[in-house]
Image (cartoon, rainbow, N blue to C red; front, side, top):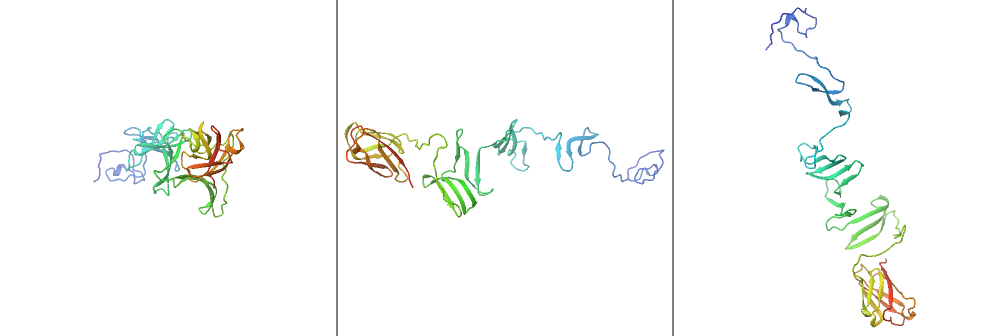
Length: 313
């Protein structure tokens, strides 16, 4: 329906038929290509009042969209209400600021990952699986106390591999630290073009010590006299024959624990004045004991012997 107006105009008709002219003021007109207002190139407009349009803080140069001087400013948010969350998904899964200099990520309202202003990545734990959608079977995490890293996955025995060379899964050299059949192993593996290497326990500085954290020492259980004593561990220590009773060749020490295999044990007289005939000449070991035979003369009361045991190949 045409819009009609009552107008008397002194302006003469022009040549542009798209414009409203005095002679056809009441006719229908389609006005196109007319833009009013002012602004800045590449700046997105906004209503500055109910009747005026001006520049906003958003700019678009065809390559980048920026806000203000180049910063996007958001409220800090919380783990339960992050400032940036996906539409149509869990609204408390997203990104938030834990502190002024700590950007954090939350999942279902709990913060798990964060980045500090020093570039440090902080996580609750790191889970590894065979692909993004696979189940996690290797987990690295803080083991409940400060300065303690753990690799664990329920009752599944874990293994750590440190490679010397790697071409592919069939050609490599690597060291392994693992649990196998309830035995803790430290060793070396090679395959294909890899070469078998040696395992060395070496102190770069200071002394190398092999010890256990046993709170109970082994015991001298047979041919040791009355009330003998043993100080040390299953690895290294000293046996003192009883002050009374009758020590004898073939004396037996029972380990506090059980070795995975019979260890190699070295035993020697710890007293410089001990008679040569009391020196040990045969040491027979088992996983739970070692037995010492002397070379002719039985140990005397209070004689002492030092020992050192370790697993061999």
